[in-house]
Image (cartoon, rainbow, N blue to C red; front, side, top):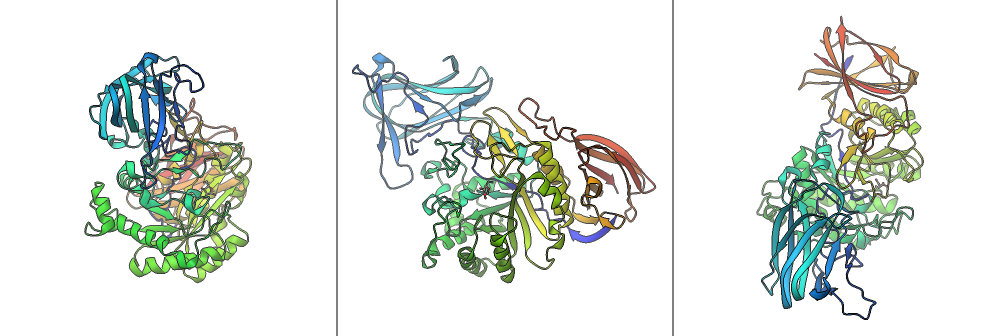
Length: 630
Ligand code: AHR
């Protein structure tokens, strides 16, 4: 085992976050009311009026109408409710495929209301199950003709995954309602109106080196108008303009017409989450090209300035002191200190001369004002081919710092490309393996599985990322999360429903790497050769100067166990106990599930090292990590 003199970057293993598959609204963002401010294209989406029959000639129990405050600003609509209580008017919100509530947990209800006429004395909120049983309830007393926010908390008596919210009224008359909101109190770090704790915990447990946000294709938009605009996602939540989610109807096989972005998680929250997890924030911004798989709409070169200004202002928002305009916005949101952002990405999966031309303008402006910021550029959506070659060639000529690569390929491709980076130019740009995942069926096929075959193949491939830590500076699996009933794209690293979540075998592989990343690359060979697939074995090794450990990662893709005899000659680890972490499964089709969330997960074991030799048997189809105290 030889030292290579190569450092493992602290950013080596990170997280790619995109609001796809209900990852933000309906997922990480713990808001339980869907379409809380009536801003969807069909503004009553998610809201039901079970006792109201618009088509009957009978007197109605009430009417829900959507009124526009104004076309201007961010919050366009509110709901006007006319209540005729003889008939018992009821409003129901269905949540994101239901709402998950837990026995004994506390919930925060809030609503903006303005009385218009008559006298509605009380607004009652009940959490109900499918049989209309009440699981928790509270009420507020509207007392003003002007808009006012009312808040009330309550407990829930029974756990239910498909709860709904029922709103009833005491008194009769007309009232305006907006920002109808329900959150659990038990959020990540107990933040009010915060993030879902179990999901952030899974992310935090990975010890991620960075958090890339907000995507993905969502950055670009299907059209320029639908692109992600970070400035519209900061400040008061009410003033963040909702946007149709680009994954809403992207795939005919998984339409989710009720998928919008409330931006309850916006750029401030992403920076804060990065900070919470000790991960470098890595925002990616659009470069004036809409998704080239959709419209490919281009901003003319002489109209690019506002886009470039967005990038400069973002750096000021993240890092500027409180005397700067955007630093002040950050401070007003509760974070006067800098977020100490070091990286920015320009463009997601762009290709061709149109990208390079625009990228150059961004690069010049960013480097002129913030030379210390490291810029991530992109090589397009594919890991080879004309777009990829052209992008790389151009970016190399420009001395680009870090180039993002994406690969969604079959499991076998991952095993066969564990040497991908062995031939990369050591003096060229560094690589961000920014999106990758083994596709068991076909790219983005709804039949793809997060099975052991995919995860084991990724584990084998990742020995190649690690062995090339002088080229690969960052890497992340994609997509990150999926709601079991609201997804558009599979496979995904974490699956969740309204109550539970679990890490797939792919998550466990990522976690094993990220929590054992080490600090310095070592050379591990067999008969002087790199271990990349011969006898189905793949290996890499690092040492960790902080924990004083030698960490050896081995993947065995064969259907039989194999004896390994590893010499630690050259290190000072000659004798003693070795911690072993192993994930193994004879069935390559096996998956984790809500019922068996840890079916495929690392098991701890031990071994001994004698006179500088570690003699172990790696099980069939296994990924093992051997940790040797030095
Ligand atoms: O991860 C899903 C999508 O795959 C991303 O949005 C995009 O960048 C890639 O095509």
